[in-house]
Length: 229
Image 1 (cartoon, rainbow, N blue to C red):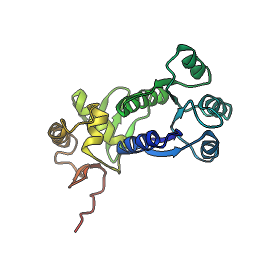
Image 2: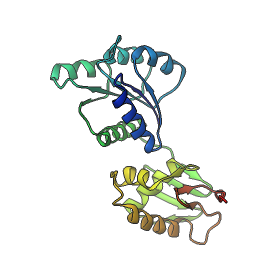
Image 3: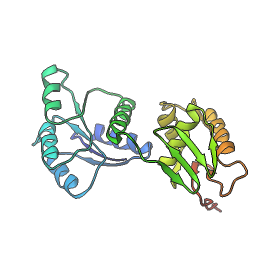
């Protein structure tokens, strides 16, 4: 997911950029609405995080400008103002959600996931890799001619891997996305569930799709990852 963070306080901006990048997002930071406007006109983003109190043009004004430009992607407003009137102004400007400072990065991530789910809408397209087919609407999985019986958590893990196929995902990224946790508490649990999933998805089939990348994480791909020296 590509994210544009518009926040004039460099400490908060850097915290958000780093925190979201840790989850595998492509994050661009900007310190003002004036700098963000050409960025948004030139590049496509999946979600926008806008601070309300920016130097020059406000976040509310930037949100209105984005909507006037035809931007339909979700907008999350960030502000130190907690009054009802301020929230109403932000929402009426075209924002989809509103988060009051101070906040935890974990809550920002959760809000973004909720906005992304809402933006994706239904029905969602099937995801395919080789002869593996995952249907997120019916929560069904097929490998070749075989229907695979997955638990709810196994399906969530496979769906996350499918959405990041061809990219290495770390255990913290999986813990955040599938277990909604930023701790290392689920490290061993993740390894166990990956083993369960590998047995059901790969088994004796070729090509093998679920790979462990030593020292990094896991990779869903129909091509064997290259091994380092």
